[in-house]
Image 1 (cartoon, helix red, strand yellow):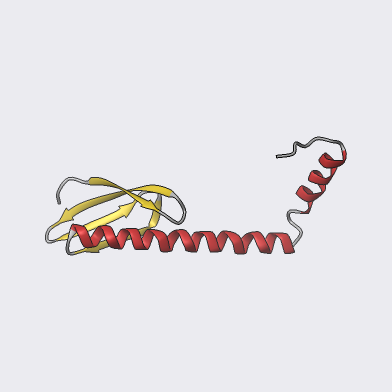
Image 2 (cartoon, helix red, strand yellow):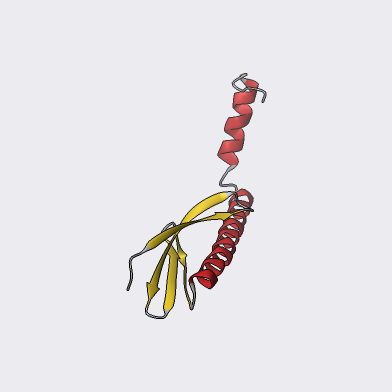
Length: 100
C-alpha cells in the first residue's frame, strides 16, 4: 500500500468540509472519512473514488439528519423536552431573554 493522502471534500448542502483519507492499494483506491466512519469505499481510479466518496458522504449526512429529526420528534411526542419548554416560558415571564 502507498502513503495515505488527505483530500478536503465540501458538502454544498450542509456547508461542511470533511477530510477524506485516500490510499492506493494495488490496482484500486481506498477512501474513508475518519469523522464519518460509515463512509468507506474502494474504486478503480482516484477520480472515481473521490466522486463516490462525495456522494456517499452526502448520503450519510442526509441519513444522519433524518435520524436526528425522527428522534427529536419522538422525544417531543414523549414529553422528554417539556421541561425545556417550561423553563423557557419561565425565563420569558421573568424577563430573562433578549430580542434578536
